[in-house]
Length: 556
Image (cartoon, rainbow, N blue to C red; front, top):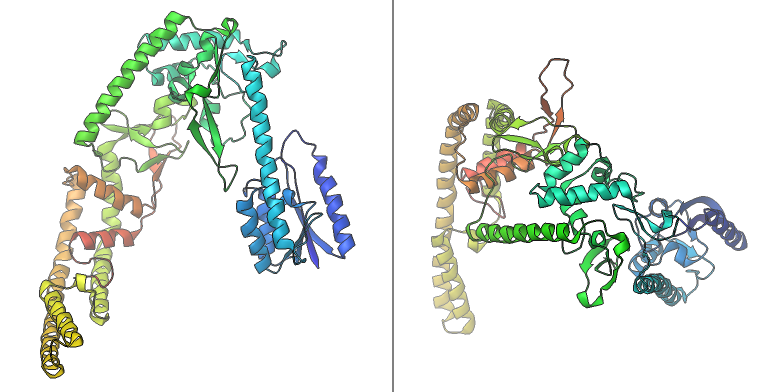
């Protein structure tokens, strides 16, 4: 049997030599069973509670390609520590004809099914027990007022300080006081982030060893408003950290791991009764007076926000511009949003300045609509596009004529009435209320009348469709003229929403905007990469014109 080896260890603190040690055990298993080793995969410092392991996924791809007959690991916990993943994978491997052989499991044995369930439950319980013990230890440290790990801007972490306890970082502490003072003086978090970036102040995450560059790229580049205002409920953000007034709080919130995948987590706020507080004036950075001033302003801002949300909920607010939410900055991946009522701009640059994104080019709203919609006018409303729409309508007419009888709810009123009459006659005949002879005559007459009604409907529908087809070239030309003149007639916000949905589908998502490379003295401008899906607009145009209604049977 061709064998594939798999090895894994969970934590960076473990020895990398663990992989080679596990492979040595796997080779002994293979030799003892007479297996021929044809490949191997491994994962370093990744928990077995998740399926998101590169080596593990490569191994599964090899299994699905039938490249081996038996999977060998030191024990089942190297493969899985999660029953939600173990059970379906064992079933899949069994369907592929692949056995699993470890020191504690051999699926070639009849009792393997029951044993694998027990081993899987034990491995998952052990992983949860480690988490429980770790949290128990942290709780004990918190009750003693000791550090429970983590980093906070303005402090030297306990593991990096000479005393083994958190210490104030003098330079960062001055920045913290500056931020509090600016906010108390009325400056917005966006202004504060931009000013800090202008002064080249390193952001809190600039030097932290984060596990995900993708999720934290903005914080590594520079300050953003969320780093300043954060979330008051969770105690995140510079303005909400009680450590700055010498108060340590442990167990305010926690991340709860998904039962299906331990790398997927959801945040939850804990019961206030479970909080552990400890006062240490030695770590105070901000005076109580300044802290209280900031809290008063936050309270006023929150009250105003609640009032505005109530007004919006009552009155509703829809987007004012056709391209709102459809433009994306290709430099940083952020959205382009309306920045002053006349122009779109990169949201990251707007909030964090050049440190967050160097794309500071503004795009006039009217110009953006005119340019993009002109492209649509040339592509979709060209003579070739109109001809294609005519062809689609005729194809729909032909399909509708050849289709079987439509559902009752899609029929005209007089047809539905005749169908109801037929159903009642058949029910009366079945119940014996009408004699068979009388009922049969009435049913035949109703069926003849129904056929007459169904024959006349396609004829009138076809005439109406031909009339619309004749109008299409003239209508397309009028629409082209309105687009070129910037007169779209989209004054109703609900029309703008509908138009945005159509454009999103046509463009295949958001339209990326990239600054063009310009010569010295040349005015900077943006390049939009647009891929147009003709079919989506044709369907939308046909449906909006009342020509075609998509669905079972459809109608003309």
